[in-house]
Image (cartoon, rainbow, N blue to C red; front, side, top):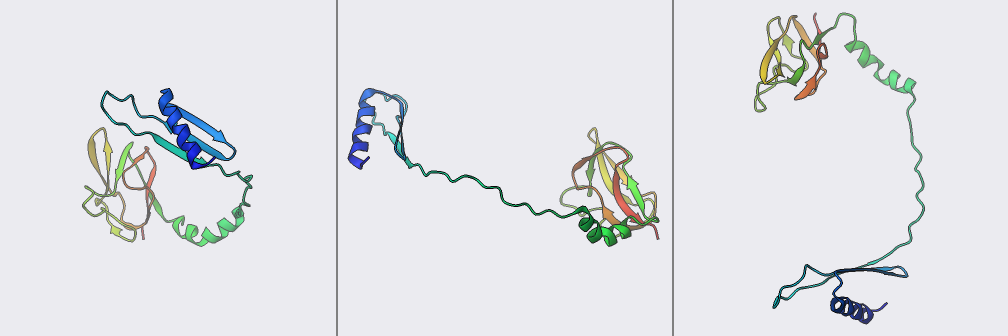
Length: 166
């Protein structure tokens, strides 16, 4: 189909009063859409979209590389052994709510990994029913890991921090 034939088709659709025509000839798709009805005296433009179809090749699944569980365990074993040491203590949530590491987004976190805390220090805030509850540490030690992301919902007795009490 050449340009003159397409122009003739557009004129024919415009005269017929059709609002939309979709036509597919060989590998060419033609879509002619008329705008909303025109009011007396207004000029309107017609929109014509021409696409050439490309035959699609069959999709082939790519091979997936996986790691065996044994390989994963051996790589993380030294780090996990340090964090899960028998003398480490897990600070758990005393209520259901939303966990916050600081009193406001602009302020720094109450505690970070590597910080030394002592009994009575505020370590986080848990929002429950529009009340902000400061959570104080019941132990002294060093923060090894923060187990919850900031501003996330938490459950009762959910682990929040891993602390080395030495």
